[in-house]
Image 1 (spheres, rainbow, N blue to C red):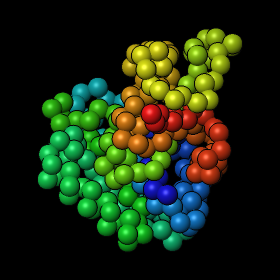
Image 2: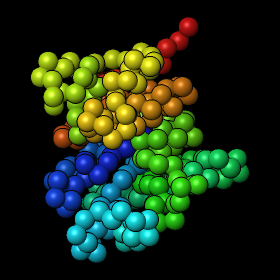
Image 3: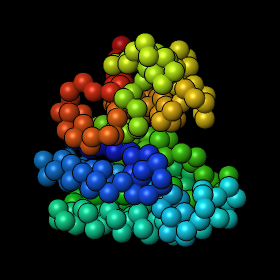
Image 4: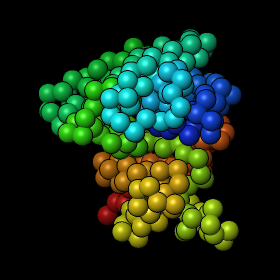
Length: 256
């Protein structure tokens, strides 16, 4: 099975912005085990800017583009060092891939990306993919790594896209404000109602980036890639997802 796994900053770090060592170590261990089972894994990972902020001893996340890009350039090195060190413990090789929107908009560059990914997987590597925040501008940025993960999944013909988040999945309302909110286990069609449950980007209802995850799921399932949104608190959930057990929110492609 070809699986694209997306992890966000909230999965990789504590609320302090420092690396969540225990969770990242467990994540790399589970992904390595899934790969040992014969799966092909592509990891879409956020975290470069956050790690750069810590490495540069900045007081907080920068708001201006030059400082964001500088933090991303520094943090990406730290991010890849962490993944290379942890995956090497399980004898797996990682490859860094940095992308912008133009890599998908241009047919030749899109084909080159597909060919590179195919060859890396054939060679047994784990591609670690991130948006190239150190050079991306408004004209060429993808915008968020949920969308990037969906674009990667459709480009490589993935069987499964897993979007890990800090909440259990899609609820009927915001579970932080409504104790009676119910988890929607299965979605067979991403319509306007389902999209509305994710709220607007940046709203209270989109805690965990649910708005962007729903949008990413819509992109992926339109191309036949099953998508699961699940809580990243325990990376062991990836075993359940890979084996088809019901967790979080699962999107099923409707067939006539």
